Length: 281
Image (cartoon, rainbow, N blue to C red; front, side):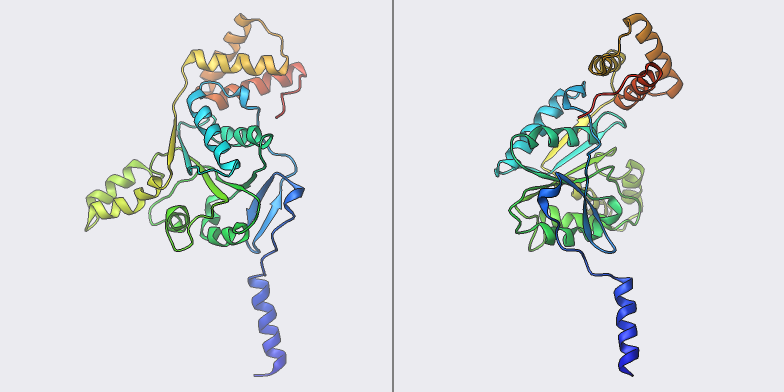
């Protein structure tokens, strides 16, 4: 085989799997997004988040998450956290808001990784291991379907494997599911597997690797209206309670749901109609 042909093959292979980029200069941003092909950490100039004071109805989860994040940022022991429960109740917003709150007390970098890139998580850890910085690794909307093996990569990093999770890295995830998979899938595993208990335990054991489980439940109408009033006050929107409640309840009925996300969407619409800027973190 000629040297020219070998060179061409090597170049083609490099294009298919380009070399990973070196770790970034950490001083350039407080948050990064992990990408693959090639592996790289891209800085986020402006994080999409709301002030922690605007998150209503999640006081217990807020206090626990803040304390855990503070412990980690200060170099003390802390747990991986799974925030699970109802859609739109502020799980991911709370993670980003807690990071902002703690950032003023001790430096910690927020790194987002999407579920589809979990097989590369060990390579990401290789970039972070040994750094003097501390990293909050965040995966939003984490869940697994039938025959999905991505969870195996995460299990080894969270609580197993020879290397395990570096001391300077903590992992937060949000999910609509407590055990990160649909209940009907769990029941199907129990009914169809040769060893049903083993089949279920292998997958459910991933959630056990989170030391803290924080549950988020549907809000009632009083909490929903309280959220909206809080958003309006923060944005400086002047509107009487009677008009606000009538519009907010109508908005909720057209959406067929009541949550923090629906409340924020209504206030976004209201602010747009009145030409008022929304509060920024």
